[in-house]
Image (cartoon, rainbow, N blue to C red; front, side, top):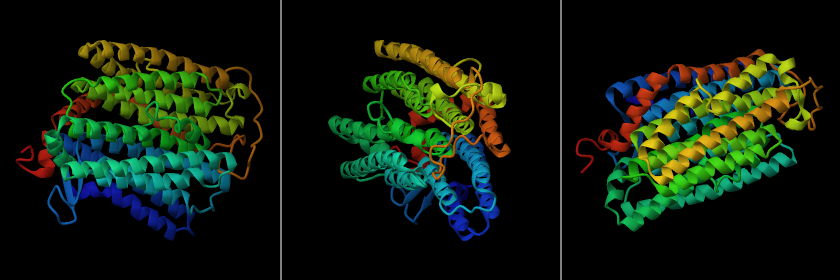
Length: 511
């Protein structure tokens, strides 16, 4: 079983190299990518069942006992997010393959997209599975290196400018990340997270607070917390739809995962954290108000992405079992729904030729299936029952009410208000693009770049992949009972930390 922990990292890296070797055979490249991501989803499902029944699985690499060497660990939280991420990356890859066949034909090979996409998937898997801060940094760098290529390939000048913003912010956050790792090592003598859970508790309160805040800033940039979010609405909307979908669905959530893992395991919190609650409500409100002000469908959804990161912070900041249960449910729901919405946006702009809500209309009349594929995740994002967003938000609101502090009540009210404003924002997209009389498509302003719009051409794999994610989002609501139960067990693991530490350090890991 321990060997399985390494496969979600090794398989996509190996497949990326093989896809370059097989560059003369486009069909083999596509089949390789789909098979590898399917295999990762299967491995993640097996790991989830195993760790839920028997506890964390640890693989120690490098021949050194913990806390030295490289530790990979799968527990309930990492296995669950690994499974959801594998499903989303597989759906996005199928969408992308269908789109590239429509745009470039079946005979066109991929010398950059597919290898870089697989490297990105390896980085995401490693971020979930690594058991130490330095290799978490390495995982982020693997993801970011691949994302630099994916966001800027075959670009025009505006996309290069937006991509440069993304690159510069990412490099800055990487420098801060490396500085944080160095400071943590200087203070504790270890970067292994299980060992840190013991060593950080022995630090003076001031040092512990400063390190905890630095960790929030580092991962806050990557998760796009307000006021560290400014880069996201300018960079994500410029990428092709599949790239934006996987970035929006996964990359910010990996930042949220790192926040959850470090704050719950390493930095012990006996009560709710007021500062993080304030950041949570600011993220919700600033994000959703920014969304309402937009006329560009992709920028509007990017601001909504920022806004809903606030819900995840809300549950984390409460540091209760039900709060963390709500966070895990919300992350699972949001990864799927946000990716589905950006894929639908890609289909819409291919039909309308524009991202401006003022210049498109009548999509529902011309393409009723696309309207359905938008409506279901949009209602879920707004928290309308009985969809998955409603299930996750109820858990968070209940957690806020149980903590019963003035700040918790304030954030709970902000969460309800944000949900209503989210409904207004998605209604704005519906009225602007799906309602009204059918309009002829606008011509593609730059047919030479990677973002092809206005062709009206979509393929069956594109719609099947989008529909698959929509069905997955509905499945989250249908399976809310067992999913809530495993999320609650994962939340208990996070707050207790004993099983994680014992799995990595062995008996007596608490010392």
